[in-house]
Image (cartoon, rainbow, N blue to C red; front, side, top):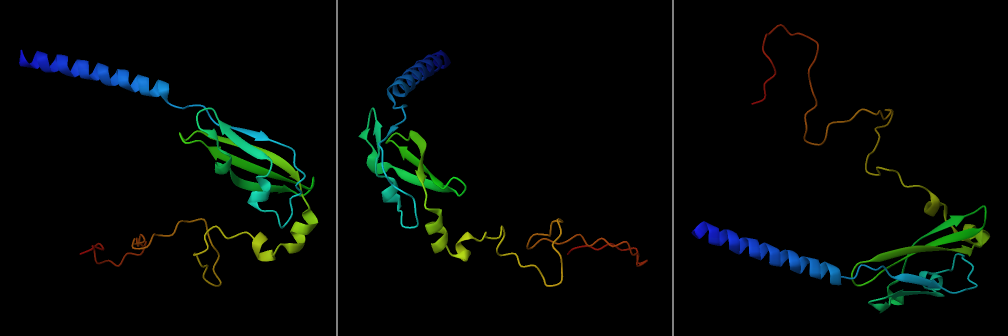
Length: 167
């Protein structure tokens, strides 16, 4: 009898929780914000800042309203052949919905190249802390991790009949 009452109680409690979850999900904001672009005469060069790139762009959300202050410039990709810069923007509303868009600007490649430093364009090595010993070539074989012992099995037989044992 007591087990039946507990079973009924937990069944009703589960039903109420499922109902509350469905209601909360139905009322949640799942619509992403939208960008609105207006024409600008910006030319991307070495002096262009993120704030310059945000001129002429607004973001709105149906629930949160104006989100223009939350716009970020994710990255800028230069196309040297076409002398353009593609700017990638993102904005998130207060519920976490994200929208991303890009915009193309004309670019002054000569100005960008004249002020770029060779150290800025050089690629960083994939593993900067690994130093190759002088006179040795790096191989694709994995080295033992720090603290691990390398397999020291030798093909030479000392004839003692004992194996290497660790204490």
